[in-house]
Length: 238
Image (spheres, rainbow, N blue to C red):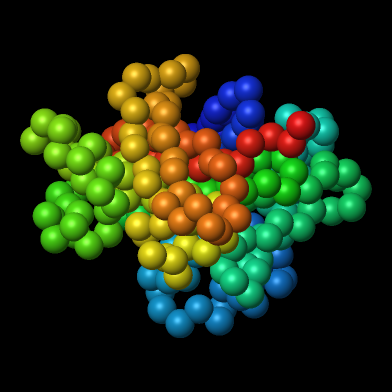
């Protein structure tokens, strides 16, 4: 997919883009601060994955800003640096006057998925290569309702749904800016089967610790070219 998509819902408008790695790592798209962060990464794989994520994220931000304001920013004018807790923070030129946005980035097997919403709202995306998940993996990381949901699936659907559940959990934990620092059983994620417009299907989220003040999330998933993509977003402000 080489053009940004837009998932439109009554409570969420999510821009997204998923792309494979280009043939060459082009650092010209980086700002000076990003170039410093890139150079500090210790391994070639980490640098490659980080640059791929930034490239896709910047292309998504560029397209979203252009749709919102009519301005086309150069990629190196869009600055994406990591917060101390790991989530990406976006800085735009003051002249862009596009307003605040929330961004999420995910990598898997030399591809990157990025998602964006305008405003400061919970948002997480995740990309997973579809591969078998063992019974031990499911027992260790899935909630009871997720295990029951998976057990009802056909053997053919099992790998896709197992990865959709796992990916959906990661997206939800990114949306609350905790990631895998949390127990993955904090949230239950049940993939729906009915396709909506654009090929996305719904994900139903439920937090398993009612005492914690965690935001209600909307979720979506889709299978594409051997991968599962998931999105988790907070509801729009009223």
